[in-house]
Image (tube, rainbow, N blue to C red):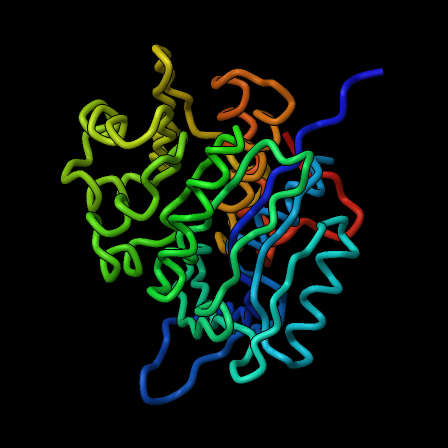
Length: 302
């Protein structure tokens, strides 16, 4: 009988997503036709939900408001098999995000972090083997010392740790130096080429992975249509992009699906090539659907 998989602990965020897919250019100061849907979201929550769909034990550490949105979000995650450590912040609402999605599937976010700005430190379960930190936890200034201590505690307990910056504009507001200082000690950085440019001043994949490699043992650099690069532990691989199995409808959460598949594959002992390939497949599939979560009852791809 195979040994049980080590648990991944995700330190992240919960959001209510209002997804507006506009069918014409936005007429600022007027109105434009759109299809509007309400979904559960939040980068950390999406990663945890996808990992549960992959069959990996996962604990999600979040903060929610004392409201219907927070209760519904926790209930949905627990129903998907996620162990949720939720702190209720009574004087703040559960986070909410408006996603404007154009005809190409590209999305722009308007976000209210709400209760995510006041997170609690994770309690590491005995079977935990990895800690993943969503960049949004770092971008909320009041969480930074907690994140720093959580990474140090996890590493001292023998866990590996990863982080993704989550989004360019919040990373810019946080500042590259502050971000890298807070996440010092992580073993893996997962970044887009835009985030790499902000963090280390270059879009060149070889130079970016070298520079980021000074801050983590492993670097995964996402290059969009050019695929992804893995560099670490003496191994460097460049994986081509995966063609989506259908039209790109909504890129919301595609990066979270990529990350969850990557971490799930690593939890099962996959090497870098197989893990990044799994991430590319999952991200491509996610972009062909509306919303940032796997459909109910569907196992994750990869």
